[in-house]
Image (spheres, rainbow, N blue to C red):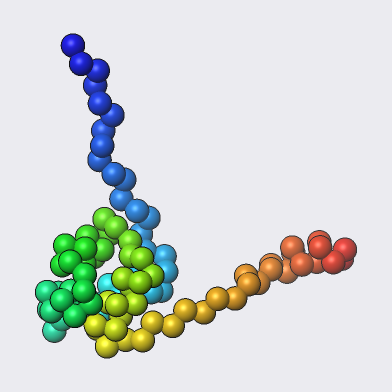
Length: 95
């Protein structure tokens, strides 16, 4: 008798939260876009694009950059410290 294996099905990632994912999905879903041509130009496998569209997987920053370029977009990343909330700032400053 063999022990039951835990379900190997992976949980779907959270819905897209980054603007990058949202914009790339919108661009790829454009009816004029041929996924196979984009995949070839971006040097990624078409299956990866399909899995990304279905939210079965996310993208690395490198893949996102290649997809953006293949779609005619420029990927710009803005890195800034998070703004503190007013309450947190007042508590920290003692007021």
